[in-house]
Amino acid sequence: MRARELAKKYPTVGVESDAWKAAQTMARDALPGLIVLAEDGSPYAVLPGSQVLRFVVPQYVQDDLALARVYNEEAAEELCRRLTGKTVHELLPSKNDQEELPVVDGDATAMEVAAVMARMHSPIVAVVEDGKLLGAITASKLLGFLMPDTGAAS
Amino acid sequence: MRARELAKKYPTVGVESDAWKAAQTMARDALPGLIVLAEDGSPYAVLPGSQVLRFVVPQYVQDDLALARVYNEEAAEELCRRLTGKTVHELLPSKNDQEELPVVDGDATAMEVAAVMARMHSPIVAVVEDGKLLGAITASKLLGFLMPDTGAAS
Image (cartoon, rainbow over all chains, first blue to last red; front, side):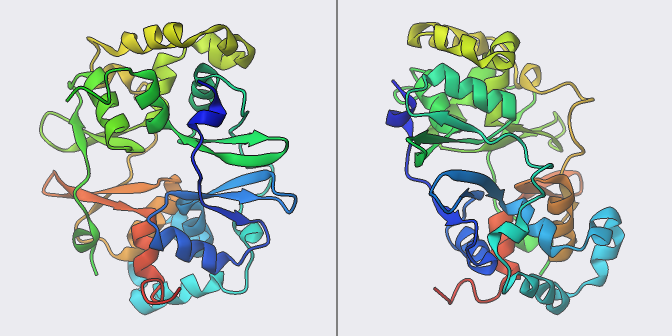
């Protein structure tokens, strides 16, 4: 079994997409994150939900959690509105802070996918062929493939 | 809205539970991770799928991904069998490597939950009352609450 056969379609956004819409998509479809594509369609980054919240919650509130209690619901909504008019690119951590992207070739074996996930602590690996995204593989999907009894037992 | 109202039931395992069964549950229910409870029922850690793979994939393969290609499917299955007879506790990173646990009180406001998620880069926060787990809040659920138009629009 090769990565291309394990890959499933996974929601993506362009790096220049609207940040508010990206956050809305995550919320509506209960996604833990989105794959961000460069303009040429190749994977550029992963945008996790927590990263959207890092953009929304001011740094000094993250540093001193006691301050968070001061914000009522209207004030919290107001902070979310900072997403409007921004691009997904502006939400991403600076390239230096970004980890190596968890990407494998369509030809990668299950063990290669597992090794990339393990090494990068990533819940998801993007599968790329000819510079284009084929889809993604989640850790749970891979475990299900590697652990032969999972489907049948329990 | 307080954390206790946003919290949803989330799959848990005991710290002394069987590691193989925990991995099976993740695979079967397509979960990105499980909340690990101490013997007294309080949250102890989060076990992400990638951590299970870190246990399964030998360190030298993680360090040199080219080695992964050597493992065929039977060899990969064999590595998974190392989970049998182990406890969830043995899968967890050493306490020093574990990040601060993303836990809030039932009384926490949405902004406090957002601040904890943002600060800890966590896709999920456990909600605890009187030392017991009430449930968990995901980043996407919280975004849906904080972004008022999400439900109606698009």
